[in-house]
Image 1 (cartoon, protein in one colour):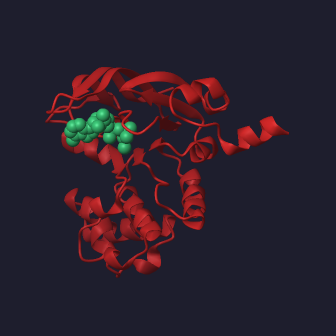
Image 2: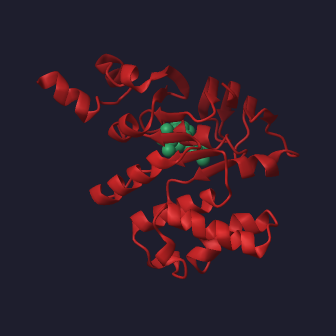
Length: 245
Ligand SMILES: Nc1ncnc2c1ncn2[C@@H]1O[C@H](COP(=O)(O)OP(=O)(O)O)[C@@H](O)[C@H]1O
Ligand SMILES: [Mg+2]
């Protein structure tokens, strides 16, 4: 299977001396849906920020065979769409249209194609009706969906999401899960929502203390109570309910 992400011996130390990642070795194939789970401070966000060169650690990160270098940065950023934890970090223009059009316009695409892409992206997340609104006036769940549309409009092959379900009410969470399940792209979700990961992903990677401590099929990793508890995680509710019956 074609490897779309290859990470070798990645280590990252923040300027204050915090070693947030070390000995990270990871390969992800085209079309995989991967949950990157672990307690707070495990290094999940730091790892995602390496996928499109926002952070640059020691070691090697290759996207679609391309090493992340200054020369490749523009191309890599069009291949990897990163959805931040806080949609307010992603939406900053006057209207939803402008926010979703921003990336494609920067690629230099013709206006008609940009318009088409914006429409398609907003439609995919069920937010087409909000196209002329300001993101400030949307609910948190709606903002999350528009933030996702800003990366869909780039037609990125790889989508990385930081805590996609955090702060969502049950209905918005359910709505988002159903949308994400339909995306055919390679997907990586940094999350501590094990129930979400159980439902949407087939592979789980546990990160703790900046290191990968487990990597395998969701059904295997998320039924290993001892492993999960050792790393500050809990069994998915479906699994724990089954254990009781
Ligand atoms: N800007 C920063 N400066 C210094 N340390 C940081 C910074 N951001 C995160 N860290 C530290 O790096 C480690 C990993 O953080 P992070 O990647 O945010 O973890 P997670 O997303 O799994 O909660 C933590 O120890 C955190 O305190
Ligand atoms: Mg984080």
